[in-house]
Amino acid sequence: MRFKIFASIIITSLIVIAFSIFYSRKTIDSVIQQNISNVYENRIKEYKVFYNTKKTFLDSFAKFLSSSDIIKEAYLKNNREMLIKYVKPLYDNLHKSNIIEELHFFKRPAISFVNFANLKKYNFSVAKAREDITWIDTSFQPSTHFYVCRLYPGLRATYPIIYNDRLLGSISFGINIKEFKNLFEQVGANKVSIYLKDSILKKMLLKDKYKQYKSLPLYKGYRVIGDVFNNIKLQKGYEFYNNNLYTKIKIKDFFGNTIGFLVINDDMKKCINNLENILQKKLITEILGLLFILLIVYILFKYIFTKLDELNNILSLIKQQKFSELPKVTKPNCEFDIYKNNLINVGQKIKTYISLLSQKVEEYSDKAYKDGLTNIFNRRFLEEKADELFTKFNINHTPVGIIMLDIDNFKKINDTYGHNIGDLVLINLAKTISNEIRKEDFFIRYGGEEFVLVLPNSDIESTFKIAEKIRKDIESLKINIGSKQLSFTISLGITEIIPSDENLFDAINRADKNLYKAKNNGKNKVEL
Image 1 (cartoon, rainbow, N blue to C red):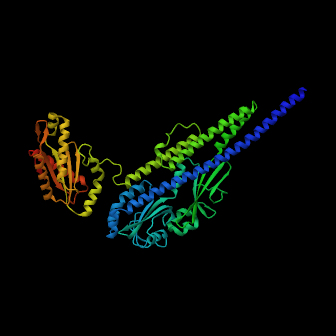
Image 2 (cartoon, rainbow, N blue to C red):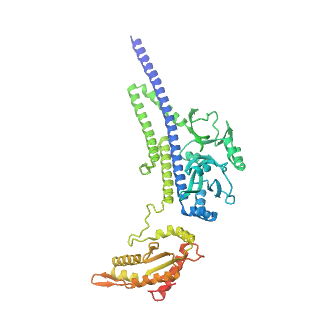
Image 3 (cartoon, rainbow, N blue to C red):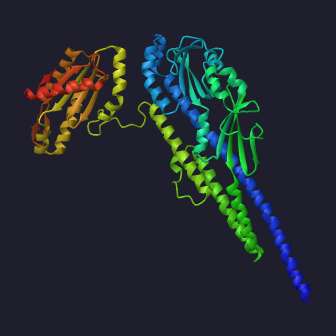
């Protein structure tokens, strides 16, 4: 009897343990497969975020340049130097920061106009090598696409330049395909490689450029940037073997032809080992009871899926550009937290790129250029727009007058009547002068009681007359203070922009010196 009971207990225990092993093994395999699928899906989502972000940047930058009046004028005048002078500082900055690879302007039909990668070579046809430019010349439609040009393979934007419904030409620029490799390495991918079809590289690239790729390893007709992953099939999807997940993303060009594959390797060994360790601990616990084991499994699974849901939620927020809702980076406690922190950091970087781009494209978007007290332009406006205004004045070749003015004895007014009355003096001065100047004039509060007037189409004689009229108007201005009336005077220094000026501030500094001359000569004067 005892033997039967002991045998039953042992057999029952073995059956329970065997069932637990079988069930646990099956469950763990399912979790591993789900984890693999989630990592793969996350990589695809990351690629879409990276691609859409880069595409948005390229489209917006192309739209910004193609809508520039200065660029259109350079085309109309066939003036390469004008276009180079206007665009080169921006290109140098973006190229140096590895934001764009190159920038190329074309005249119709597909004639090189200005290539910032080689400014000396121009006025030749690229129709055979750049069919996307030829397409724009006939369709007038922009396009952002992968393409292997003469210099490099990458993602590029091609955009028409249109004036009065007439196509002047087009602009083309882009980023090197290697940037996608860098982006995935930044978000924690173990290894990233790019497989590029050798026949296309050989056909499209210049000979000296192709030599750089010819030195790369060759795998099944593809040149490999990065490590060569042997035995993988070059087709869209993923493969998993030897604890390594390979996510394979097909890259097609402008014509829908496959030019290569982006292959992302994730080492799943740590994750799988963690799950195996959990299995061993779970089996020991199962000897004490199946219900307890099931509870542990439930808690474990809930923890894993909660972490995966956090990662998916962060990817969703990045995709929808809801950057303000992203959680803060925390101290990592596990592998999932490292992925989470990496995704959050990527989201913040994408937010920064979009913010910088918006500031470049939108001319006065969300910027406070008005002085809060006088409601005229403030010094920030002048500092940010000085180069733009100076360039515009140089292009127009018209005289520009500068007036620098200052309230005489303003400190005494503040000390005698208080700062509230001082503010009232500034408000009345600004209102009086604003009523005197033209719509095209720029009236700026330079600081404290100092003001600057920039007068387009005004030579030195006209500027003097305007300054003198302003001086007299302020001299006759009366401000009621209870039963009293307050009057005050101003001193003015004037000048005009001259050919030797390198920027707008050269003229302003000259006017400022003349202002001090007026102060030293008795105040309430105009000096030039």
